[in-house]
Length: 298
Ligand code: BV8
Ligand code: ZN
Image 1: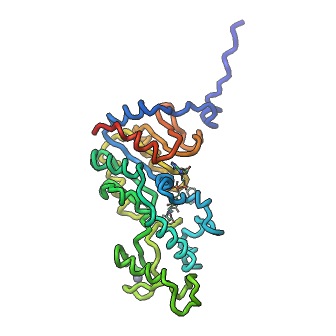
Image 2: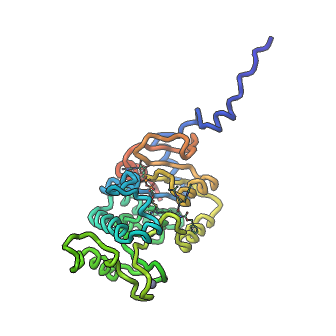
Image 3: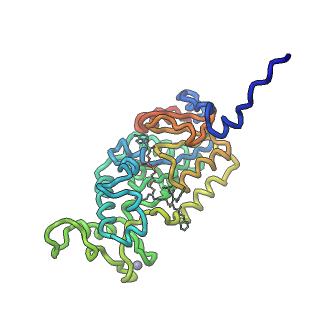
């Protein structure tokens, strides 16, 4: 009586990720692959700036003081309590200004300078300005969620940047003369738009349930479409929960990219469905990223 064939677990394995082949941990095979990569895409999350001392979004415990950070980053929250939302963003502006780009920001910037935008594009979900301050060439850095330092009107297209934005911030940070000296902002302290005279001025970041900037999305799309393949997808310091940013990982995989993840947390095998040809590097971005990119021979 021939032995019965082993049960076919393939459907269970693929459905549950159980026994999914683990991604590689080999730095040398990653560096060899990167050294022959023609096109590299990267998705940068809050974990990239954590070594610079900035709280990650989740690290805010998803909480800022006693508020859920996700609840504060919405148009509805600003509508309901613009003073509270501005206080949230003023604190994050101050923290970002006081922080410095770390070695990972610099290694990514150096790679972008060396390889050029045809060969390397960074898509950042971060709004802290640290990649820009690390010297990352602007044409090779796409800020999906805007940046903390620009201000815009809730009603018209008016945008304030640089000194003009800083002037508005100064007025917000100076406790209003009438208030009882307490630095707490009040609704009446929130500046109005000088252009349309009706909208309130808000941080020019993309809040939840808001569309991402069209020109940013289309320039990323053009980069992706510029060639039939992408060789490497670097996924640095992100919990890969926010969309559409996270969708770029799958887009890169569909174009043949091998994925390299850098995260302090242990691999969550099911999260990104990494395969054997991918890499998972557990550790701090400021330590791992410079090592990973050091051997890149442009
Ligand atoms: C839109 C600006 C449509 C503001 C941000 C249900 C399922 C799926 C999606 C949705 C859904 N319901 C709604 C959606 C869509 C929604 C979404 O994705 N929600 C999530 C929460 C489920 N997305 C949107 O709303 C987007 N807009 O879809 O619009 C539309 C179209 C037309 C018309 C109208 C609407 C807008 C999303 C943008 C939101 N704005 N930022 C602000 O920052 O205040 S996103 C915000 O969260 C941050 O910017 C950041 O990008 C993001 C958090 O993600 P991470 O960067 O990953 O940070 P996190 O803290 O989560 O993780 C850090 C990671 O780093 C961790 O893994 C940690 O382990 C690791 N780490 C920590 N330290 C280190 C480290 N790694 C390495 N080294 C270290 N040292
Ligand atoms: Zn206006």
